[in-house]
Length: 403
Image 1 (cartoon, rainbow, N blue to C red):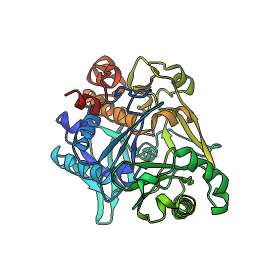
Image 2: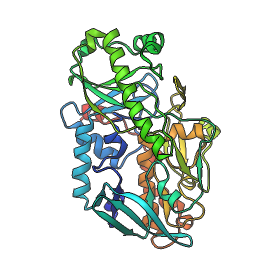
Image 3: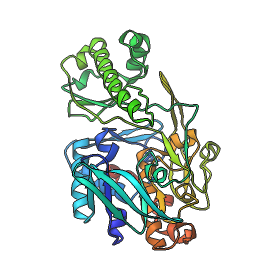
Image 4: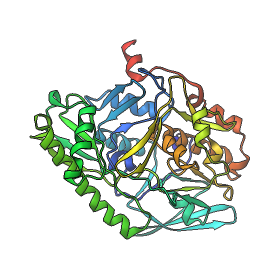
């Protein structure tokens, strides 16, 4: 969307048969990392984020802001977001290529020339001046033969999200009570994860359940098996809720199972690797293009995860050079396949900073044109994305209340 608004001709290659990626199809349900810490933090990322918050905020119960005490998280209705994405892609003149899986990448030295993608209706070749790898798994970089990284010794678990409807919101249990019950009784239900998180937008009678841990291997048969196991885990978690919190969940039913939710798998090797120490220090890189204050959220244990939050006033930054493979002149990453160590990646892979990376990728390729993204004027790039580096506005609904 950012690239199209710059006047560029854009093809969006999407492996799902519908638009929206994990935000819509894995039903993540929350915009995380979009605000600074504290009860009412200011907004870190703008551009497309402004449009989403404004447009969904006008709809009845499509957004809900959960404030603090540490972070501000925006819950969203995935159906409303899905239709927003559809309409905006069409409005901006973006060419969608759906249900398309990359099969081959053609390189000419340091430049990627084209992609060959496979669809059920035949193969398609896409040629372009520049490419953005927003695949999450660094699929474009990997198929292009560019260096990539994987977590060899530490597994990172994904989550099978489900949406349940018909809950009694007035009887919804507090998070500590859910967590304590799941920790005590989860083993009896065969649950791998022992944490219970439920996201509720008031007035809809619907909850998004984030209660499972599933393996996300890069081997196709193993991932297929893990997908089925993830759905079974989701069923078991829902059964646990109905048994232990019947006042809220006894009459509820499952409305939807999301696509498998993936957190961290494979990422490209950039010119710079973001480190955990830089995240903790709030280090602002000379080529910073985005920021967040989201905690270190490393899902490296089957029964739980590591959560290390930061104080109000903290921000850590994403260097542009962590988005650019050293051996390619026209490829930029956006999203969870940027180069960062395992723990640092867990703090910048959420949707707020991912949108900032998307904006930076679009502007960098626009500035580079037929040249190299390694030789662009970083000051010009930072000027274009300055809202995502320095702006400190209040959240949308606070500004609306003030007129």
